[in-house]
Amino acid sequence: MTNAKRVAIIGVFSALAFVVMYIEFPIFPAVNFLKYDPSDIMALLIAFIYSPTTGILVLAIKDVLFYLFKSGDIVGIIMNFVAGVLFILPAAIIYAKKGRAREIFGYIIGVASATGGMVLLNMVVVPFYWKVPLETVFTLLPWIIGFNAIKFSIDSVVNYIIHKRVKGILEPNNESI
Image 1 (cartoon, rainbow, N blue to C red):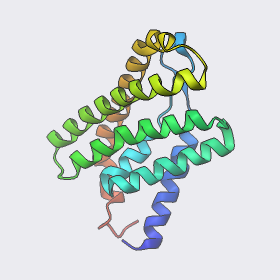
Image 2: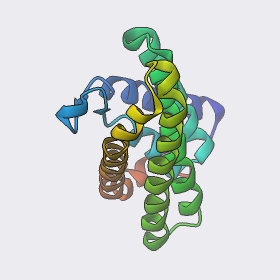
Image 3: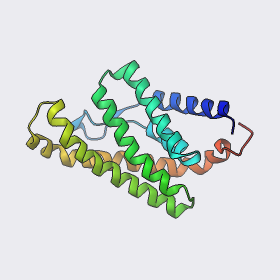
Image 4: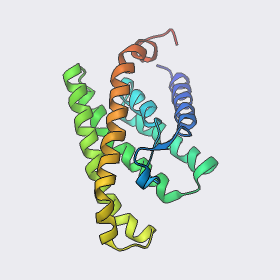
């Protein structure tokens, strides 16, 4: 694949991820600051087809664009990026050897990694960012765990469904792009 083609694909999928990041809604209304958006699916798809690094690049570009054009919340965007990396990196690395069993195992490890990692990150960041006691964070942990487990499970199921369908179009060896 040429560098120009790679740049174009990264650009298109970063833009798509940025646009679908505007489709957001809380999974749990009680903690409406935890909002689901399907944008990580684009980065996961690219990570599966090309490489984990390419997927992380799409994730980074999407988050920078969202920060600049909508959010303005650097802490939230960084946490979103870290969550995406914790999910996409293990899933894509495990899937790299291909096969449905490895793909499913990758999703499971990715969901567990992102869910566990975000528990730890929230315990460190939230007390400083929101200036609340750690005990308050502990009361939020069930919501944080549930949110991340659901969010990344949805992303996994959607990627599982669409990955094989779009792989033939996006594969590096396919010159019909």
